[in-house]
Image 1: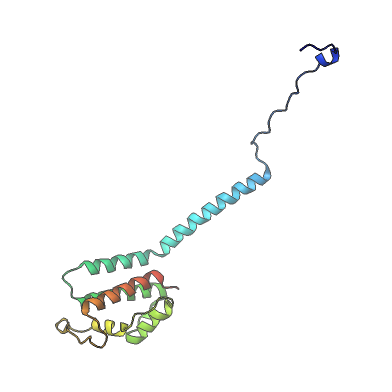
Image 2: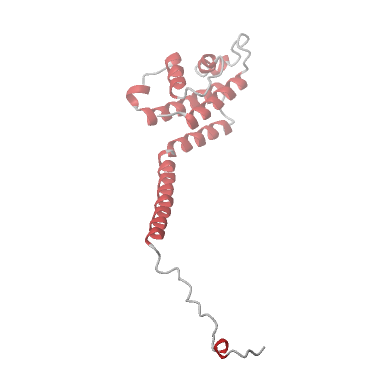
Length: 169
């Protein structure tokens, strides 16, 4: 299309400036980048520290699983062995002064206090007493508590695992 106006013919297309580049970053971007790196580093450090502090829990849970897999042990010996693992965890977490002298009902009360949100099963004292009966007396009268030796072992194992996972310091 031809125009008769010579001034219009002298017009050229508009030249846009080069786009603004990402580099160098503005100060606010540096702050954002530093904050993200700090948060990620802190989260990794927290995770590794938590894993390091809970090694004793993982070890105890593994020991309980090993005890349960042994076929040459009677149920009362297994309950006693799981109680020993539980006692070692308590010694590690709360110290010798507090836990070394605990036994019977005081031991069960301590377990209840240190993991108050984990309900203790009924007849837990009977289960714990079963651990210290001679193996020849495996047929203990559980009629009042409706427990068999196998069920007693299962209750103690489940409670011990829950306590190990959930006790607070």
